[in-house]
Image (spheres, helix red, strand yellow):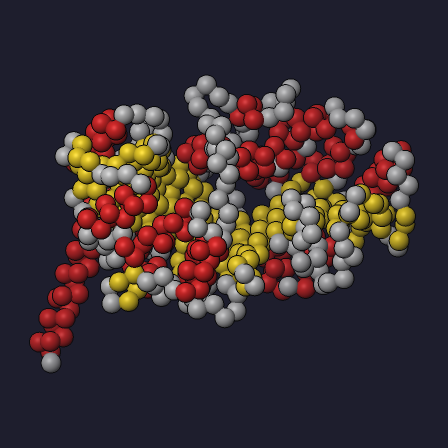
Length: 510
């Protein structure tokens, strides 16, 4: 019996060693100048999502239903092909991003190269050819290579001939250049415990975000985002650990002591407070809050420029926004939920803790009346009508708020949720997002616990087979961006200001 146990132990060690060698071999293909890298523990995720059966990959019926309803999404296509892609289910997969030939690339160890070529050829509608002793397929801005037991699936950063792309791929497979393992920050992240680990240089993350239309629009409307993206943070790491109950997310900004970012955060961050949740209906799908000192906030270049832009607008330019913002001492919260009746419309709540809520409320009322909008006064709320929305402006203790809803809010407020109140009361930056898949509703919450460390939790809806599978279903249900979304490609000759209204320019946070 002891001999059997000994042999089993030796076999287990051999298998672990073999998987470790495969992982390290693939990591050596990632170039050292990559701006970001992600490791994906495929065997752990397949097991936790209950998608592994005797070494075979299976797609459960509930996940398949979501995939079929969103088959245009890249993730859905990947999961559809997964069972016949011939991947090595005992090794990790990796993704990296760079400013080189391949803007982004996925590296997947294979157990069946022929199956991979067949599946990809069928998906793309083209055949593999031999280039530079590699089996390659180039299609528009996508490039695939299968060689040495590894699939390379890349998006091309700059247009190039297939031969040139094959040459660049050959360099990766030869593993003769400097690899990401020589970058200590990235290596430490890849070696960390986590089902998914990610490391991004802030400059690389910023470049990725700028390709996204939604981010560009958000940055214009919420310039506080640039406190992070335009700062001297060196890099950011993220680790996701999947458990039987939830998914735990840990983030960290890698930043030097005495950096401008830390000085800025020490200047503008105020004490968190959950009081803003008292005026936010529990039905809101998105709630974001950041605790700030208004007097210091209005001195930031981004806020000054935003206020200057509003000052040039007809009518609203007469509103003393700077004076109102200066009274904030605590959280500024924004809550949103899609209008269930009008596509593209949103119900919204804006709330802030003010040192002078009464004065701020009077300023808004006086401005509205000067515009011919005499409000109705109900209790301590001023009520206005705007299209299909009822706008209410009021105060609750030290909190001033504005609600824009197409219904009379009768449900409980978000403060009734003890877990949410605890989060918003203890973290200077807090986020809560409800996820919807069919009739199921999960929730993701995140808080920046200090200036550099953050922690989040994803909890699936009750009745889900596993949090991992529920998370995959949620990601699959996200509609892909429109084809024109990233047509604006910020290049060397473009700047942040290219995406702003005429006459408005932003400068990096210092």
